[in-house]
Image (cartoon, rainbow, N blue to C red):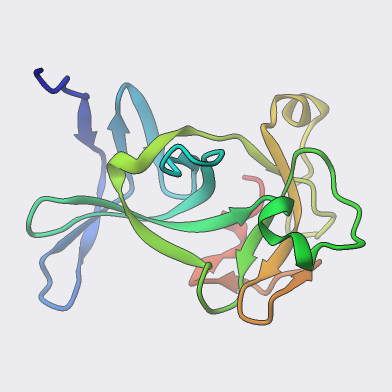
Length: 174
């Protein structure tokens, strides 16, 4: 059976990196007719066992071997961190954004693992966050206003100016 070809096109280049300076970074790409850019939130295939994972694109790059990769900083569903949210009231569509340092913060995935865009709206009252409109809230797949520190393994209400090298302005609503 012939492999169906999925449309793919790189967007704007960002720079070269990696130990051997052989990794090309990008700001965006088009995959299967959908435009993606840095800091977009996406669904990632979980192998079919669970609901898709949700993460924020924090790096987009192509290796020397032409493999296309995305680095994703994760959101957690309350059920994924159940023992850490015990006794905490959560909304039906609430996520917790990964922060801190350690396993579960972020990782690199094949670009092909992306299963589509996801609309996550930040409802934090933090002064650095622009408040979403009622319409934006109705269109949201998920909301978040709290963070899960993967190193300290606890829920936080606030976040530093940077998380995993990302400016807080790229975490909160644009």
